[in-house]
Length: 284
Image (tube, rainbow, N blue to C red; front, side):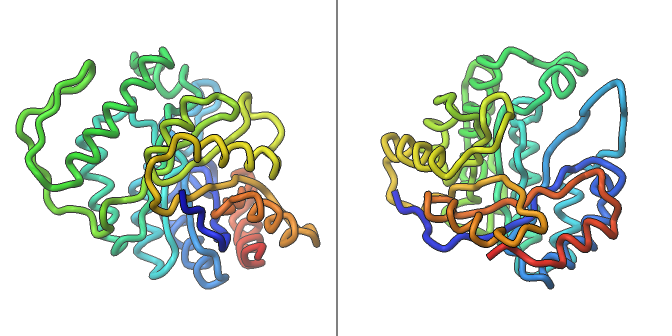
């Protein structure tokens, strides 16, 4: 497995809240980020966070399309898209359309999605994690098959396709990069990621952040299962804030095998506060 050596820095934003829940704001923030030297703009993919405190939520494909139209260079992507609550063929159309619009700057992050009670249960969709994992794997095969632009038939436990062909193909070759989300030390998401193009780890239980040593363990584990020698991305979600050690902190993760630092932005901040944080530039 080839781990890319130079770390890149991107923004990591929710797709909900008083600032991030609107595509027009995301377009402006994307332009600011590119001007400030950031390498990427990654957006969460939620549809319904809670029944108790509803808040503005933007569709991630509309939000990222707005960012793409206001930028020329930075990568965009989802962190992460829950394939089991979507039709894989609809997702294949959306992702290729965004890859075409961005001229090949899109990354698809995939996972099961959380909170499952709100994202699935509220709509009478599957909540069992084992079944959702199987739906995720079937969905990935369908999406990759449709991206290839050849006629596809598929018979699975959850999805069936009969001689379907999708055009156009993605701009990127051999296909749009796919990063798998997962909570460490649960192993299944990381064996899945070993057959894809990258990983987006969090700690199980969403507790304290993963350390550089955790990332060394994650990379070593994925290497055991990865069969391809193609480049492989390792993303780290974190926050550096205004600390003087922000560059050094990111460097430590880069030495542990991280290739993308995803800087968390507070969804509770005002537009001006977020703008100011982005304008500081990436911690590298």
